[in-house]
Image (cartoon, rainbow, N blue to C red; front, side, top):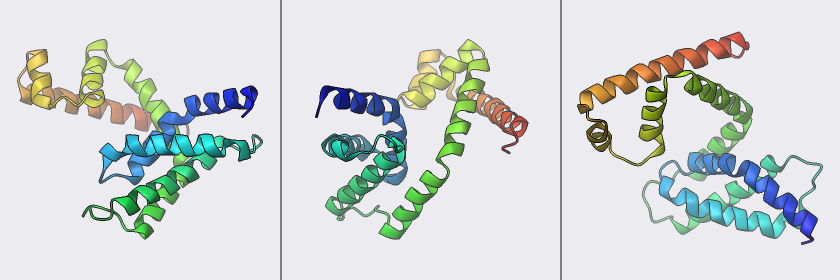
Amino acid sequence: MDPARSEQFTLLVAQHTRQLQRYIVTLLAAQPAAAEDVLQEVLLALWKKFPEFDPALPFLPWAFRFAYLEVLKFRRKAKRDLLIFDDALLERLASTYTDHYDMLETRRAILNQCLEKLPPADRELVRIRYESDQPIGDIADRCGVPVSKLYNGLRRIRILLLDCVQRNLSQEGLA
């Protein structure tokens, strides 16, 4: 691949890796730990096929198709597991995700705006709870509060965020 095309690939992948990862996690709901492995396979397949990509077309739908095919490959390899969706359900999940992608991204952007409006301590609590794999008990110990108080604080924050997202969606005529 020529250097300009290689740079184009790198930029597109850097721009869309998180969306691809979320798509894969959605399709592998019963096996979220496998998502990172599948993502690596998707990126490898995209690299191999990138010379065939038409830059006049949007990259993400093209990449979603590769992700879908890699999820199918993974599922065939993991057939012996009990918590595998059947192919029809997987196709519906993939279709629903891609059909609603723009709305999901809009909601995610609004949620990020709402998070920024939270007081710093609340924002940090959300970050610790949802961006780490720490059990709630460990977080409570780290913060020096009882678990029940932590749960109540998170519930209060989730309600504030939900209200903020719904209000913003209504203002944009999307609710």
